[in-house]
Image 1 (cartoon, one colour):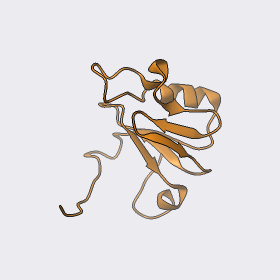
Image 2 (cartoon, one colour):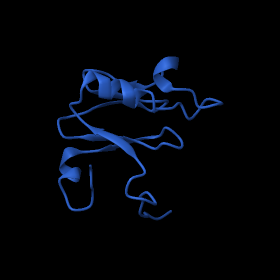
Image 3 (cartoon, helix red, strand yellow):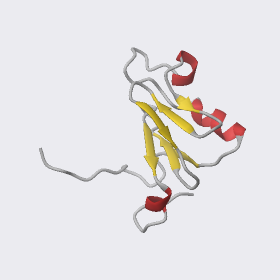
Length: 99
């Protein structure tokens, strides 16, 4: 297997927030994170398997926890509820856009 490239097909495909975020924004983001390993892909925080805490701990369903740092961007794929974390350093570079 070789390394490849990844990206979305449109510049506005992912729904995202920058950490730290308001409680309302965290709640809105949590409604979008889905459990992709369960039939019907339920909202992850309702089934207790994922979501972003108010302390900045991102629980990716069926994959583990990640601590977020100021400036990190947490993005969600609207079709699958899949989580993408982009570090603050990467977002500051020329290859990412956040609006």
